[in-house]
Image (cartoon, rainbow, N blue to C red):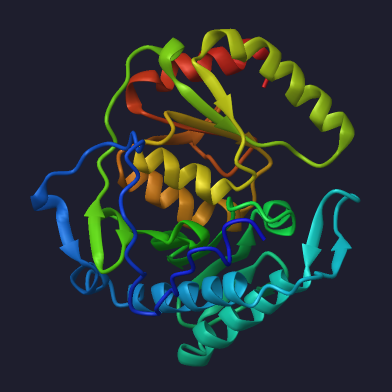
Length: 304
């Protein structure tokens, strides 16, 4: 598997292995005052340490215990797959989260919804980017969010092949984590849509893909370029990190949105629906603030 066994650094449940910064990283800069130790940031919310440790454990299992041959099953179409590792990681997350907090509810991509009585609901995607994982590509991650009163208050995304993590607390900010260091994410601005690097994703049904291809044909001349990672949570986090300028996609589910959208919003991105403020309906559009309206107009003009 590309990038999984080579140069392995084990994830820890209380932190992540250190990794040298990429010289080509175009992320938005943080000054020294924006860097904290991970333990301090995890203390910002009582649910955050559990979310971090559970997501880190699932990510480590997915990365380090990937079998040579993976069994798969089809979901909504032959190209929409679930692997044995998706279900294994979700079982692990359920055991960790509800084992410590049995009164909480939980919504998972592979296991459906479990009601709770505490007012807290966990929303988990045990392996976002299953096709990338299946093909040995590095663009996949584990996503864990906690909702209180129906709203996400804590979000964690671990991208283990990159030895990176992201976390956010509603109203308190978002951070990029490498090793024991947590760097505050503050998205920079951009005013020219033609200079924007835009990510998107595609559905699994052929007719939907044909419509999405037409949108791309119209949008591409209006932006700098397009990217497709295959993972919604990575696209949200890379927007927050400054590795993308915008991200849009139709048909996202609660587990795609809960942690990633919170991280992007807390970093300063505008996250909304194409034709309303509710980004959980229809087409979700996330971007740097200065291009939000221009991108929305371009997508409407393209028939998104």
